[in-house]
Image (tube, rainbow, N blue to C red; front, side):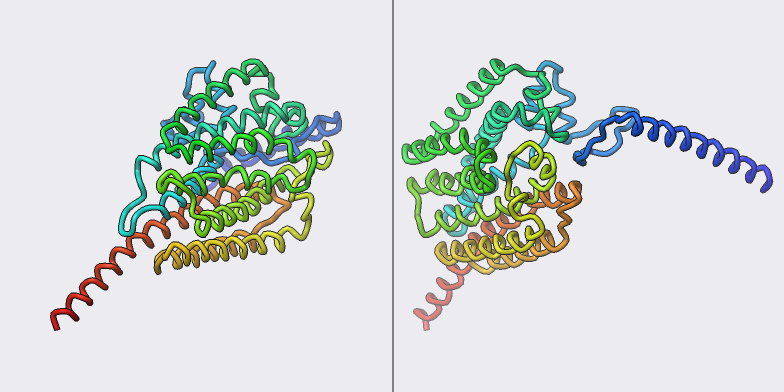
Amino acid sequence: MLGVRGAGFARGLRVMTQAWLRDSGALALARAAGTPRARHWQPSAGPGPRRRGLSLSAAAVVNSAPRPLQPYLRLMRLDKPIGTWLLYLPCTWSIGLAAEPGCFPDWYMLSLFGTGAVLMRGAGCTINDMWDRDYDKKVVRTANRPIAAGDISIFQSFIFLGGQLTLALGVLLCLNYYSIALGAASLLLVITYPLMKRITYWPQLALGLTFNWGALLGWSAIKGSCDPSVCLPLYFSGIMWTLIYDTIYAHQDKSDDALIGLKSTALRFHENTKWWLSGFGVAMLGALSLVGVNSAQTVPYYTALAAVGAHLAHQIYTLDIHRPEDCWDKFTSNRTLGLIVLLGIVLGNLWKEKKTDEAKESMDSRIEN
């Protein structure tokens, strides 16, 4: 019996070896013939199953949509929602900080800003791909974007952009007049930030100014105006955060960017990237601490900041800027970081009510005595 099993194993091993040699030979021939190789790792969900299973991932939802609709959903990056999260989270921080002591954030405003984040992130991606269509064709990771690949024409993208901005305007008009004016002022940033990579090594700074506008808008939507002592350091902290995660993101494309003449902080910082990211992290935590002091935050908030500091330290220390897959993993982990900040804000706000109740009970007992 053992002999039969051994013979079967040997035959299986021989078949696998022959198949491997055939594949290796084919690969060698392909390389000898000059077949181009992808120089960049592209994030994926792993090897696809032979049978289509039920999946609720964003990419699976897009793939299950009607085929004519799929290029438009990919144009607005609905299959990659991490960018929407990073745009939305500073809004939630601001809305949470503006809530009354002891109260949860306004759920209506959270849902309204969530809708706006999807629409404005989609509009920003559409504008970006319209500006960059010729560059995207030259970068492995972006060559299959709908406009670059020819799935959507420039005229169609203009119409689609107009529809997204019209819907976003409808969301904006649900806010107070101050917030409507403030939100409209961000449109110039949305249109121009994709151009910054052509003229400066700091396009990530322009993205930070754009992506964190919600830190101002969320507070004004609740309070009717901005409180500079809270909103400005919150906005600054978001900008520092964007410099961290988008520099990490930019390291995926640095080779192609250098070849085609685009600029980024990844190319500016080179091997000093971790030192720069550490400085941005310290600045972010310092600004968030100032936000806490100026908004009378409590213990849960500062506990969350300690967790954020640990997350940033681990993220930066373990980052391998020469491995695109590691850069992608570190980049996407920032959703968790943003949710930690939000959790600290919400719990810290609820703790305020607890402290108020304890102080009231203590005062009542003193009066009785």
